[in-house]
Image 1: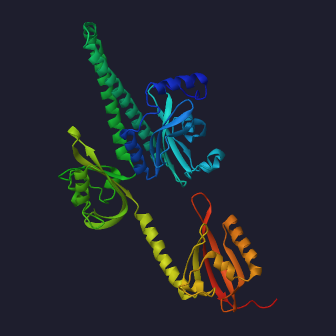
Image 2 (image 1 turned 135 degrees about the vertical axis):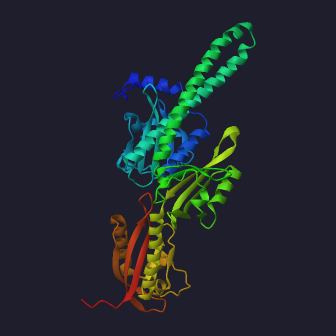
Image 3 (image 1 turned 180 degrees about the vertical axis):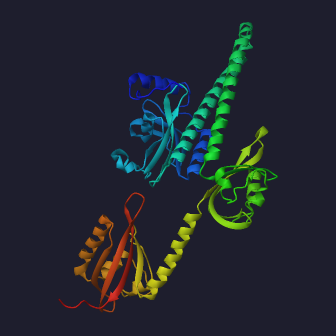
Length: 458
């Protein structure tokens, strides 16, 4: 492969690069399932919500595939982070896009970016495949190699697409050739060219198969291919085999001997539904029963099933992807159980607690919280009612304390007097901690309070 290094900004290189891009006739074309499938596969492999396959023109960046970023067809080249990928042969990683001023306020709240260039056989970088996330993540060397492999597969798709276009043109030319004697004589030359195109297509297909083999074997998530309707495991990658500690070769084994149960229904039934409908299936955090040596164990996984077409477009295999999220699910369950214990402890200690939504002023509170302001358990109680119950001399001070906690992401703490509907006054000690949305804006505050004795006179 001829390389064009350190010329990414020269006018001569850019003109040659655009010529290389234009020969593929792909800019501003309609979406195609082949590219959408690759983008969805990248999202599943890396367990990330967004993948773009883009081609970089003179002024614009065109999205050939867009998964997870709305209906955007592309963007200006001057406003796209994808252009950074053209400067490197390897993977370009931006852990926090918000550190780049012109991308800080992007409307989708994207923070993490990893992109690999699409490099032609003659060394021109014509586009990129990238994955994005709203939170920063680690993207290790193995994942980078997989993303580079996906970039090669994308370019193989581009080459195949061009071959198909050329073949279609050749067929049209062939039809015209039959109309005149001179064109019939010239048909031989076109057939020779057609044969060369077929040879090239076969070469591309072989490369594509090799890239798929690498991606399949090295993917960090468990991937298997099952034949239907007999449901025999035809192929399993290392991550799938590692679910079983004895590392037995499971190729050729019945699927029901490996994964008998998924959320109370048989895995075989799910395979049948995908096989019969011809449509994919996805589910998150499902509970699987799997054989681990001689005993059964439970894991949680994000599951994706997709039919694979065989000869004559007939589905004869199903590919399944299992992203093990057991640790995350168990951790979430522990947090939920801890919250139940904490809530019980708060109620037992006579504490009031609430969650306030700033945009609406609505509050979700326990009975004790309302009681501390002189309200009954079934009374409506909003954020504004809280300040109305305060003696006027405290209101501005408390609002300022809450604002400081929001600006500094700290715990708000205060003591103040409230007046109940019956005219009696009471002292309250209150605490609050703000919560923020994905754009860094304060959306809620979680508060605790308790009736206390009046402070000693100073």
